[in-house]
Image (cartoon, rainbow, N blue to C red; front, side, top):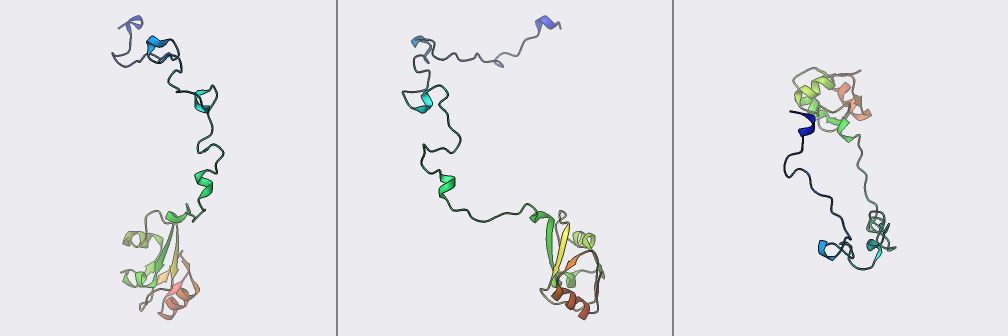
Length: 143
């Protein structure tokens, strides 16, 4: 192979369409832009969503809701979830291994929901006031 013999594969390159080069080309005169109007003129483009001065759709519709990007990294655990765990010491790692929370979770909050009858030791988790009282009443501890 020599450098002067290298060429692209057949059909890989297309000719650049030369618009406005006479009636025989098929794209002469208006050059595929139609007749009149802003889009037929040179430099006649406007920003995306522009509706000719009419109030654009994205501004006419009411704003609604918010989706936090932090959501996948937060998790809530009920006392009833702690009840079902076979371990006595609960931390983020043990919750992930048991499949109670997602592997992405970084911040875990224990909430007062359900009943807890066995004593569990909770470490490295955020615990609400009610949940803390329930855990301690069941003979557990919160660190």
